[in-house]
Length: 86
Image (cartoon, rainbow, N blue to C red; front, side, top):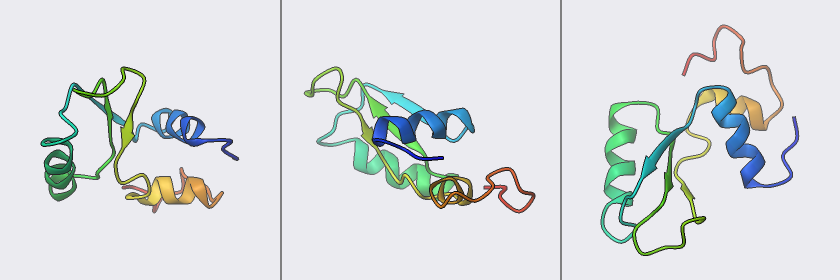
């Protein structure tokens, strides 16, 4: 599976259930802290959308390769194999 751009990658990540959209976070004071907290608690995959102080169509993807499934997807390996549980 090839990606022509980051939007295509985000669509594929969403298809395999590895995307969480966080709406309305402040890019100056909240996104870094939220990303750190999510990484500590679970498989980190936040995409920040509708960020305060930024254009509505501007999104921020944090830790795009922080799971075995997403890494396998980028490396064109099977993402549904039994050992890709994270």
